[in-house]
Image (tube, rainbow, N blue to C red):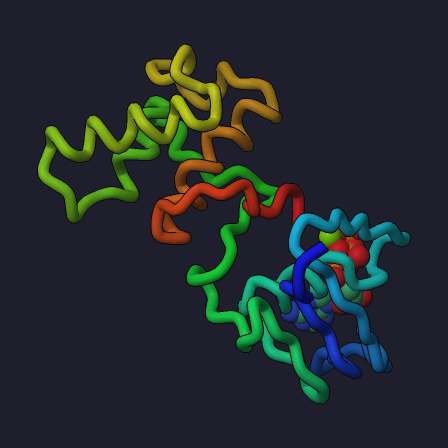
Length: 161
Ligand SMILES: Nc1ncnc2c1ncn2[C@@H]1O[C@H](COP(=O)(O)OP(=O)(O)OP(=O)(O)O)[C@@H](O)[C@H]1O
Ligand SMILES: [Mg+2]
């Protein structure tokens, strides 16, 4: 195992309007290559923990470090949300192209094909979201998440936060 890639040091967090803390003095470290499974009843704070790792929310006290630094949203990880926000009137490829507006058409098409290939969804490129299974829809969003993370696909996309 390598050095700790994710570190929680005495992390506490609550939300306004909600009694008590969601996470109370939580400390752990995850090394490179280590697999961490988060289990717990609904409302225990699993998504909140992932949001902290993704840099979408900051701890009230304590520290969260990802690769030694406080995470910046979109910079160190990618998030595929529980609700699939695919545009129903666009194909899978169209949904992906939609988040690449800054590229010229030929490069955009090449990038879309590349991402779909990486997640094994090339055969669904021309399908509409309504025709996809849940997993395929999640896969359709993975490239969008990858794009948001800067396009460096190294398998760290978070599933079902
Ligand atoms: N933005 C927010 N504002 C107020 N309360 C929140 C907010 N986000 C989460 N909570 C509350 O914090 C607690 C933990 O929520 P969280 O979404 O992390 O739970 P979870 O373990 O992911 O649940 P589930 O298994 O249902 O997805 C819940 O009581 C929830 O209502
Ligand atoms: Mg959750």
